[in-house]
Amino acid sequence: MRITSTLFLVLLSALVMGLASCSDKKEEWVATEPVSDYLPLAVGKYITYRVDSLVPNVLFNATLDIHSYQIKHVVDAEVTDNLGRPSYRIFRFKRNADGSGPWETAGSYFITPLTNQVELVETNLRYIKLREPIREGFSWRGNAYLPVSPFQALGYNMTVANSMGTWDYTYDLFEPITQINGQTYNDVWTVEQADEGTGDPSQSPDIFANRARGVEKYARNIGLVYRQLILWEYEVGQTQPASFTGFGITMWMIDHN
Image 1 (cartoon, rainbow, N blue to C red):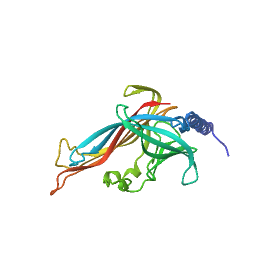
Image 2: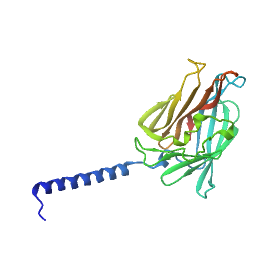
Image 3: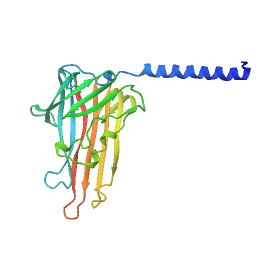
Image 4: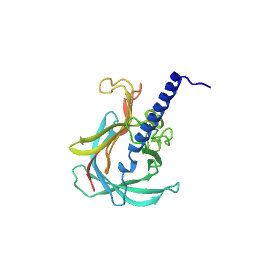
């Protein structure tokens, strides 16, 4: 079979482009970082956060109130999770927003570092917080293990939370240096989770509204430095006054070791 010079050049070009493509992919993969760089775990490590918690007004649920405090997350011990995998138990402690008063226990959760991802389990809810490869635009279903109504057991039965299992966690932005509430950080990845909703009770108090917002920021060699999770619904009934259900939390790091 004879190969003309033109055909030979076409085949040669295709081969070179293919090799270049493979080379680019290899370099791109090698350049990615391990998730452990952005969620380091060791017994005794702690991070303290300032927290603004959004909750419905305790009397009428007609407004959303903000309660502020400090939370310290302490890596307590290496344990084994319910699937037999090496894990870390994290204790939480809570005190006043101004840092006064003693620390009081405020629950616990577990973090399981795997080969290419990090899982977190809290109140029997399992999340995939970080996943490799760490590169801009990469996404994964971080809430894939959640049930349809994940917070029903906690008293929140919101349709806005029913779609959490389909949220795409995405490495949206890498910042070599950034500031968050006066703190400066190096090498920070933003993980976008959700930003959706309908209506605005402050503008249209007679119309149904909801809000779902999730975003986290991780700094190299520190861990989680910022988090916002907002999930609420505003119901308007014909026989009952309008009311909110749901919660929100905004937290940012103020201290760590």
